[in-house]
Structures are given as C-alpha cells and as structure tokens.
Image 1 (cartoon, rainbow, N blue to C red):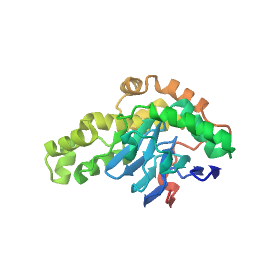
Image 2 (cartoon, helix red, strand yellow; image 1 turned 180 degrees about the vertical axis):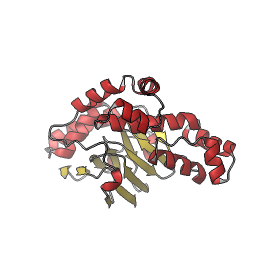
Image 3 (spheres, helix red, strand yellow; image 1 turned 60 degrees about the vertical axis):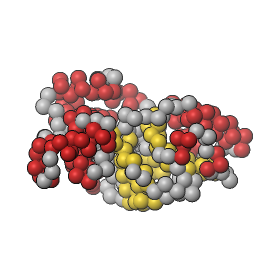
Image 4 (cartoon, rainbow, N blue to C red; image 1 turned 90 degrees about the vertical axis):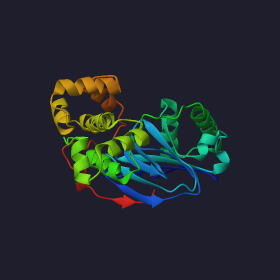
Length: 273
C-alpha cells in the first residue's frame, strides 16, 4: 500500500505474513524499516532479531534479507542518499529505538499521501529526531559463526528447547568454549544471557497475542510462572499482564488479532522488500 511519494521519498505500508521472508536484495535508496511485530534482519554482516520498538536503517546498495517474526505489517521509508544525515554512522546498518514521534511520522507518511509542505516538515522533524537518537546495542544479534548460528537459530525456532551449550557442542562436534566465545564476541552476550533474551522476546509475542502468562512461560522454556514474571519484568519493566494490556491498547483500529496458538508455518509467503 503506497503512501507518500516524491522525487526523493517513497513510503510504503505493507501487509505481511507472520513468517514472511524477503530474500537477499538491495535498493538504490536508503531504507528506514519498521516492523512493529518484530523481524529477523540481516544487513551485510549484521544480524538482528529486531523487536517491534526498533527501526532498521539499511544504507543504499547494502544487501539485506528479512524474516518476519509474527508481524502483520511493515512500514518502509525509502530515502534518496542525498537526504542522508552527515554523521558517518549513517553509511552503515543501524538498529535504532523508535521514538514515539518518529514512529508516528513514519506510520503517517506510509498510510497517507502528504503534500509537499507537509512532507518537508515531516522529514525535517524525523531526520532531526534520528540524528539525535543513540544507536541501540540491545537488539538480539545472531552470531555469524555458522556453528553458533545453528544454535541461535534452533533456539529462535524453539525457545523452550532445554539443551545446554554442552549438549549443542556435542551435537555440532565443537568445543563448548568455541561456541561460548562466538556468542560473547559476536552478540555481546553470553550464551545464557542470549537464550534468556530470545525466550523473553518469544514470550512477549505470545502474551500480546493473547496467550496466558502460564502458557507463555511454558512455551518459552520457563519451569515456573514466577521465574518467568521476574525475568520479564527485568527486561521489559513491567509484569507480562500489564505489558500485554498496554500493548493491546496501542493497536490501530481495525487491526486483526491473530490466534497465538496458530503456528507461523501455517501462513507462508515470500517476497522482496
């Protein structure tokens, strides 16, 4: 669904499947992508599991691919490199927290055609916000080492998997220390920290879609709801129930609610965005 378009800007809102995959591709324009439902994104050597409160900045000509992680819509601003901010960091991939005003601007430009004056004012404010937004390093990176990546992708596919790193190491015929070093050096987290975050991100999706706290805890690998609630509060700043109520209240009017028990694999799809 096209939104605002001009000589230097193209804005799109796209309906996506919960597990839709956009294969490796590139654009001649810079892309600011926002997937409120979350996505796995690879841009060059950078691999992220982006939560819904993060933008992905993809510089022009950078090869990238995306795998939706429960998302139902995606917002993209394609900007001419002429508009790129002067800071050197904008020439490389970035994960950025979504400022509420910036998010509103992106959503609005992607859903409605804006006149020239409104577009210029919106872009000026958006670029000012982005220029003053600190890069986020708390996204869930996926290790580049193929053996550690196998472990990470296995956990992302089955967050409740109880195998420890020793178990993975025996299966992959590699030392536990090698896997641990890969997680630490390539994601900034120990294996235990990484797995905890992967489980909580999976649980967040479940509770927002209507899963009970007990079921979300069980499906994401927690032995007790008490331990799950404590870990969830540490990461998200509130209990799962309070967080879910707040998130559901932010849903745009008319947004359909997906059954959380439905397997993402039951809704296929692929494309290039």
